[in-house]
Image (cartoon, rainbow, N blue to C red; front, side, top):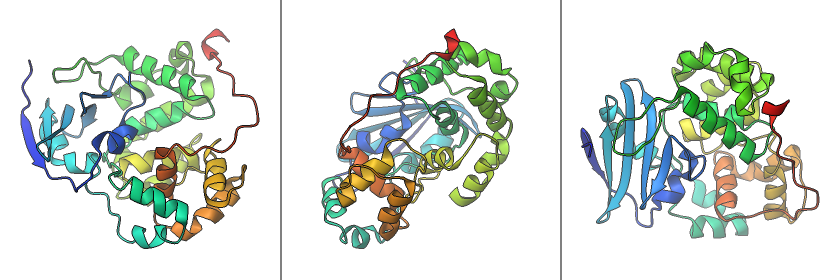
Length: 303
């Protein structure tokens, strides 16, 4: 069994919930790059120091971080951020107290933290595939793309690394067609991959959002999905989402439907933590009443 080359013990706050906090780093239980197994997170990624796998596991009140591969030191040094332990909740308790639903959810999910990976392209890859399709379609495209490039990750688990941005940028759009990705998203992904180095150098979520939305095919929704995980931005709201405006309107105002403008108005009292409120609603399983038919699952590979 491969032994870790870097190790660190972290001390999470009382009530901390690892699986709930890092779930955003996995696309599904079958994500080829990350999984939660036996109460531990296994996360494979590319770092500025090289490929790495980070394992995070609770042990005797601590959180043990172990790194594998050339980038082991990098992921272990950043393990507290990946686990959400750098998440800054300053001021949120006061904001949450102003609304009974948010106050209740903040208390119920006080062990939930927001991770900050410090890596833009792996989350951007997934977010582009999630644009305007169902979750199943997005996952199929993401998993098929990762397996197509197929570089094994270091460590004892059979994980794969996210594809190298340069390899994605160099692939013609039709390479992604059999994975269920139409030309529009494929070209967006290729443009994003070509800009990956510049995106990675952004100082903060605001700069990353500006640079992301300057890329054709990337709007506020995609940018918010990226900076929420790459930077741990607690204020990132996914404007343009199919479900979230209805969820927010239902939870905060008892209205079964809402548009982006209504969602933002209801979230305004929580500015600075608007994305955190949305995360709490998701963690609690809050859903607006369903009236219409489900979106169909399509396969662009057959078109």
